[in-house]
Every structure is written in structure tokens, then in C-alpha cells.
Amino acid sequence: MSTDADQKLLADTGRRIRAVRNAQGLNLDQLARLTGISAPALSVIETAKRDPRLTTLARIAAALRVPLASLLEEASSGQSATTDEPIQGYDLGDYE
Amino acid sequence: MSTDADQKLLADTGRRIRAVRNAQGLNLDQLARLTGISAPALSVIETAKRDPRLTTLARIAAALRVPLASLLEEASSGQSATTDEPIQGYDLGDYE
DNA sequence: AGAATATTTACCGATAACGATAAAATTCTT
DNA sequence: AAGAATTTTATCGTTATCGGTAAATATTCT
Image 1 (cartoon, protein in one colour):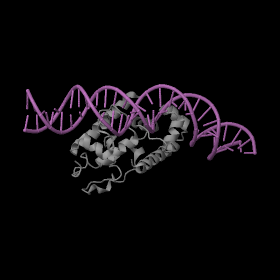
Image 2: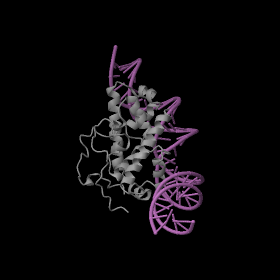
Image 3: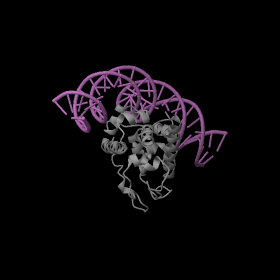
Image 4: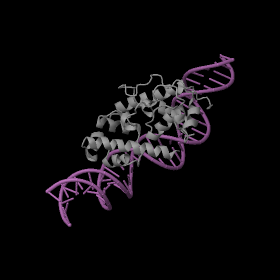
């Protein structure tokens, strides 16, 4: 049981979620409403204290409007290319 | 809970796992030994009857020697690309 | 057809995710 | 510094994952 690699994956994933959320100016409460996932649950996911289910991650990605895969890995082999800057132009203006 | 989009995601993911496994000539028993995940557990994941945890998917991807992201999305042909397309495309519609 | 192999399904028990809520701790603002 | 907002932590209850095992179906091969 690679609890080692697991922890790193969870830590990296949580860090990416938080980065995107902050980049969009959302707090946990707002993301909680967008996802239907409670703020405490989001907190423990972002801090790698929980091993989220696939559909939980998908809901977070959808709410943040980023591809699910972008939360899971570095833009490694250039495939998806795009930007290092996730989706700059998103105004999520309506959620507050 | 958009069990709708969730089910599709789980179905697609399971189908991709099975495709890769078959492509490598592995049966469930062999993949079970490689991953430490039991064959019945792998079966229900491949048939979309279970919502796997992130580290479970990661172990499967590692055993199959494919990027985790490749199990989650189609080989995105220029998905969100570059531009400032108004992101309306991301249906977050059901999660709200 | 029958037999070997592969997959599915159905249990069980242990562990964990998740929502809800509230309280503590941290960070930000004035 | 005090106060407000944000995040973290904790507890409880419900539900689900997961391994194990075994039985029930496929599926494949001779």
C-alpha cells in the first residue's frame, strides 16, 4: 500500500484545488454551495486529510470549471498543452 | 446530486480501465495482484457500480502504467484549447 | 457437449467518506 | 489591538468503499 505515493497524490491534488479556488476568489463556503459538498469536507480534501471519491472530485472540477484531469496531475507530457494559468477569464461573478 | 453526470463519468472511467487491462492481456485476478485491490472490487469499478476513491484509481493507473488522467477523460483533442471561450460549456448545471 | 477460465454477484465486517453542526484556530481587515 | 471573516478541527449519523470469501454466471476452449 503505497501510503507514500497516496499521500503525495492527495496533497498535490488538494493543493491544486485550493490554488484554483483562490484564483477564482472563492471561499470554502461558496465552493460548498457550488458543489453540494460541505465546507468542512472541502477543507479536509484540500489539506489531504481525505481520499475523495471520483464523483466528488468531478463535482469540484465542474464547479471550478476546470478539467478534472487538471486537478490530478501536472500538465505533464504536454498533451493538454493549454496554459499554466488555468482559465484566467472566468468570471464567476454570480456566486457570492 | 447529478447522478446523471456521475454515472456517465463512472461508466466511461470503468470502460477505459477495462480497455487498457484487456489491451495488456491482464485478467481481473492479475490486476488484483498488481494493485492490491480485489478482483471483485475491480469488477464493480469497471462496471460503474462503485465510486472509487482517488488513491484507488491511482493504484489502478500505476499498475496499468498509464497516466491517471488518461483513465478519466478521452484523449482530449484540444479540449478547452486556448481561447477565451465563454466557459458556459461546462455544465455545472446539475450541481448547484 | 463438458471443462477450464473469467467475470459477476452476494454476502460480511472494518474502515472511511460525507453532510451537518458547532466550536476552535487561523488569517485578514480596520 | 479588537473584530470579522475564513479555515480548521471535532463529533455524530448515514452511507459507501473495500478486502475476503464463496457462489453464481458468463465466456472460452477442447
